[in-house]
Amino acid sequence: MPGATVIDHPLVQHKMTHMRMKDTSTQGFRRLLREISLLLCYEVTRDLKLVDTSIETPVSEMNAPVLAGKKLVFASILRAGNGLLEGMLELIPSARVAHIGLYRDPETLEAIEYYFKAPADMNERRIIVVDPMLATANSAIAAVERLKQRGANNMCFVCLLAAPEGVQRFNEAHPDVPIYTAAVDEKLNEKGYIVPGLGDAGDRMYGTK
Ligand code: PRP
Ligand code: URA
Image (spheres, rainbow, N blue to C red):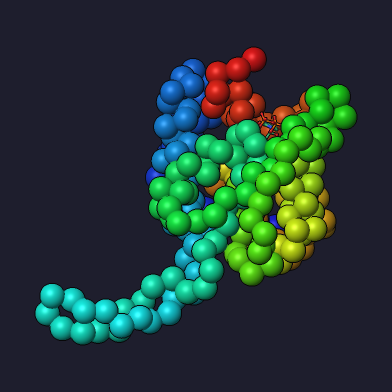
């Protein structure tokens, strides 16, 4: 699927604006990220399959829908992915979780892996990969490649902010993995930061640097 689906819900857009503001505190940034993650999760799970099950209400029996199939997996790209993960787990507390530790080398912007842990049966589950930022897309491309090596074959990628360059590179590398984002910004700068962007998501979440 080419391009990216922009989740233009007014609440998402309002909260994004507050996350972008440079004077938003660490505490405020984390709270907004958790709130947005609930809204993004709601939107990107619209197509989950349902199956009818027989239940008894206090009044009568009925067939009622529940989620079908194996529990889905949230795959969080560390560190900043955990901000999205937290809220999503509140909506789907039974989900399984994969962690992929990656950081961008500040000189080369290549993604360096330092941790990987995922459920064994990834080939049988739907996987939602989360990371607030898609800049060069080196991190997202590497994470999805790693998950494919583990058997994953039903994935989408969810972020807050993407650069057009990153969307194009990710689409070329993984045309089978749709991207959902709250915004696609103007460009990348010479240091690989999204412009206008929101700065370094991990640093703003955790108050580092
Ligand atoms: C940030 C962000 C993405 C990556 C995006 O992480 O959370 O993982 O940069 O950039 P890219 O598309 O150019 O790869 P960072 O490497 O700063 O690590 P952190 O989450 O540990 O702060
Ligand atoms: N990673 C971030 O956290 N922010 C950017 O703008 C680019 C990569």
